[in-house]
Image (cartoon, rainbow, N blue to C red; front, side):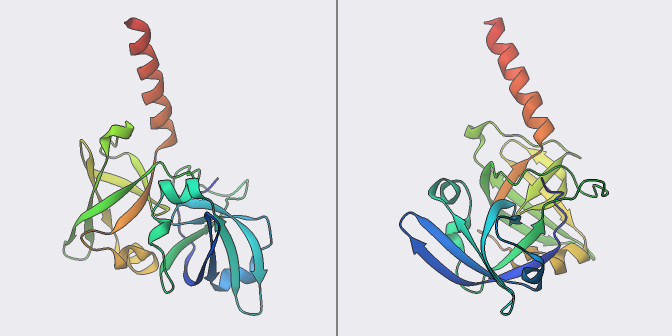
Length: 202
């Protein structure tokens, strides 16, 4: 489980195909604190650390085909900046919202607007997967816990403060950027219960 509060960014320094999987080597000072089998969120995708090189400040994670199909990881190349978060510890404050690290689908950035000291990002997503947003609800974009400020069918916006703009990979987003979305887990349960209720009424 994660909070959606990005700890730091890492850099992809190697991308290696292994049959249908891809091994990503990530460089970050956090590598010195990691161990094999540990879970890390990478742009909101929970991946397991399979190798650590503390001398080089690097570690390796593997993405299987299912993960590649549902996320934007296939877009990653050497030099890509990735948002990183270690799994939450019990007993700590939950500053964001509950994030599972299980990406629901991708979205496309369609607008970036600077608004006198903050930034507004607008995204579109495929409504055929039955995910929804609500204004003032929570959304995880590339693993960053955010509040929805505008919500329409298949589209939403979020507002970014300068700190988030600087210390996450939002500063690299532009028109056409593909991002990972994880919708609010409680909202997904409510939507599923309503769906089952409506089916039972037929």
